[in-house]
Length: 180
Image 1 (cartoon, rainbow, N blue to C red):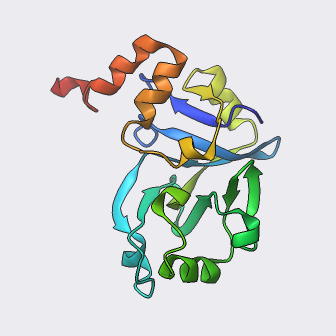
Image 2: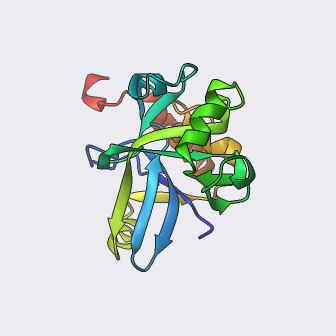
Image 3: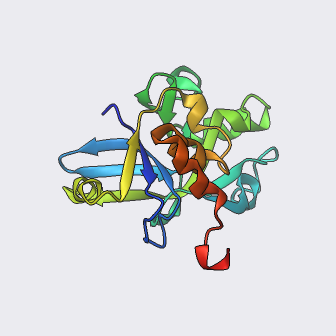
């Protein structure tokens, strides 16, 4: 799939996905799976895994499914982190967590190399296609892993402005327009 970003429509009323930017890691006839890139939690990695001494990596809310699981996408490659699954050029999903924790503690992994998520966003067969027909989402093409691992707080507005420059104004409006 070439269009791997889902950008929530500014008028999307879904309470969970409002202002979300989702990166799709899988999209097939059986269903779709991805991670919300811009919903940062208050947690850092060492809150969940205190044994990781250098675990000052933020954790993001990846979606409403399996919120008791930790997932990660990264640009470390499968040569550095075994068991990783290649998503696209220089972007991988998962890998051997013990190896990863050692690499983090040795200072060989930076926050811009990896993003951790609790949960994921999932759609059953045909569900995402229907949401796209209903215009709940815009699609965007991912160009590099750097974009995916960039600042989360401005991502939704930046992706909207790529669709249409005038849409960026929606990112400047408060989350609840009734409070403006």
